[in-house]
Amino acid sequence: MAVTKSRHDPWNLYGLSTDVKWTDSEMPVGSKFHETDTDVDYMWSGTAWETYGAGTAVSLSATAEVTGTLTISSGSVTLAATAQVTGALTISGNVTIASGNVTLAATAQVTGTLTIDGATTPLIYNVSITAGNTNYSAVLTAGITRFGISLQTGASTANFRIAFATSCVTTGGTAIQVPGDGEYFEDGLKLASDTTLYVGVSTAGQTAQIIAWK
Image (cartoon, rainbow, N blue to C red):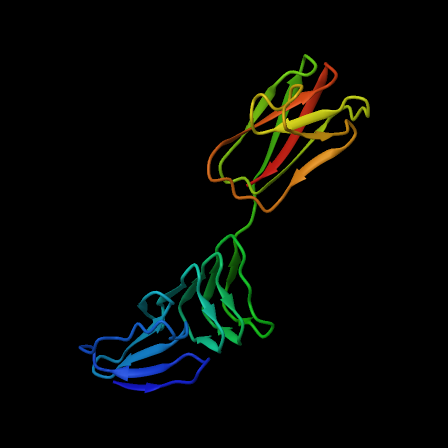
């Protein structure tokens, strides 16, 4: 097996299909192995050797970090939620970026199709508050990435409290209190399962309105 490598750039390895491919912990993501007897190419994803080439998908693992130059001439590429490329990135195939934090270098270039998953579906909840200082609830469904809650009337005297435990919006509970003419907003979420949001208002006869995206 022949090896061409530097400290930071992806390595270029050559050998036979019968050779045991290295899984060196220091081997940079994007390193390549070319089987000289089969003419098949492999790329190191950070956890495994994967075939690549025309029409071949390439995936970078959840903790993949490329500190050198990564060039993918064709095929499709999936970057995991925490993948990070700090060198030059050139991709002429299709790229799908999973939801989460993906950092691409300033010189990143994609000449194929770039798909970034994001929130596309709005959800609106109206919760009728018929009694003051009483628990009411709405179920935020799995997959929601952000939501906001306010009162339709917006009366400054009708403060409302929100929490994720049923006893917290009544007196004595630990909750977030918001002025009646204010709004509470959460972003950067990824609810793994249905989650109940509890709300209580100091004054009866209110309607809590929630808008969410998933």
